[in-house]
Image 1 (tube, rainbow, N blue to C red):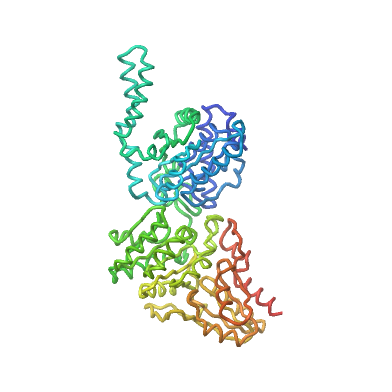
Image 2 (image 1 turned 90 degrees about the horizontal axis):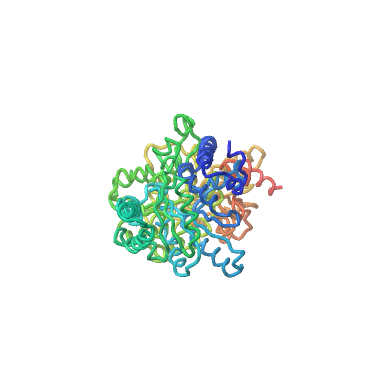
Length: 603
């Protein structure tokens, strides 16, 4: 096993080129074996194995710097850099070029020529749908910094790529006249002219000047980059010599490689969307391991209810940013393709686009993960809320996300949304209430956000509400729901913390503490009158939320009542990777944890 001998890129560079395909095979075997047990982002990382090997083989890492646009494709990088036993992570998208330019500019400013390092940014074709990537490319081309950008094209980001940029890249890949031009020219000259090397060099230079005739726009060269490729991203015998040559050239360079998402594992190659981010799965069958009888998730409930409402309301349209399956919009997409818009990894555009749709009378719902909604903060304020347009934001993965890592925890949305004028914010305690809130949202003439966790639907019967065959929507704007009453304490909870708070009250009742439990339903506007009345009748008042407490729901409650509020929630820090249930327990966001906090404060 060659991989056992590699604890750093220096060890990798000791190997002969002929040994590297075996290293690639062993890395793939390691990634598949681990992710089948733990879950993770499989398909993208399998596709980038040879590319990452080639970069570490050609660069003097860690002295030279590699910036990955997303961690989804970086598992091989972590394995080769001494983290073979702990390599799963991920990140956001479209920012690598800007980060790389910052590194290169600092390098050129602070270091002497002999101390300078090389900088490479690895981006995917999905990243090019994000405007930030083009901002970085534009500035890099302008400054003429010595940077190498690797564009890894696999025709997918999470879902299949969409848009003009994706079409452009596919043209580059598919045009035989471009791919074969150089080889055909060399063969022609060598077969007819003696000592044709000088002529070949001149012809290649001529070919570079003619690229614009064969590739529409020559986008990257117009942005100030020298373009090389496309190369087979799995052929190390081609890729490594080409990279070594390209690294001798100064200035902005863009190297285009083509890879296969899911490479080396049949099931991931056949269904890269399913294996982009997967839970544990059976290696032999390629089937995700599911427990029998598992309840529906909030995402599934959202997707089903949206389709149901859209049968009646023909003005409902749905927008996502390259996440139709992840947000539950795949069902809507299949039912109403003419009313579905996947804008690619471009959340800011998704929100502004939805504002235009709403301005002309349609009823858009923008389904994004909480962590990705952050990327569109300005557009929510300026294009939606300021115009008071009835856009519905389905904020999925709100709260602790868990295994997706620190970058994906959806813990900030309450704090950054609740200060925006005109915006209504709701959080359901269960699946039935999510359905009610979605129906309620489309009845409003203002922007509405509904936040819900990455979790299974809890047992609603704890709240004293039996399952209903027909929803009887009793929601009123800004009105909370009193679930039980008592004089020992009161706890006002929102969203996923409502049922744990109710269960905590049941635990404390056995110890003689009778408390009031309120399902806030609305984070904004708050039921100020109810909260003040309840606060006046108890000595201790608590809030519970699955988000950071600084500027969060508890802060909002404390602003409207004349009594100290004990806020239960997450600290204002980045929450690490870990299983959702374990992290909730760690931070006291369980029935037992909430009961313990209340009991301690009660004395």
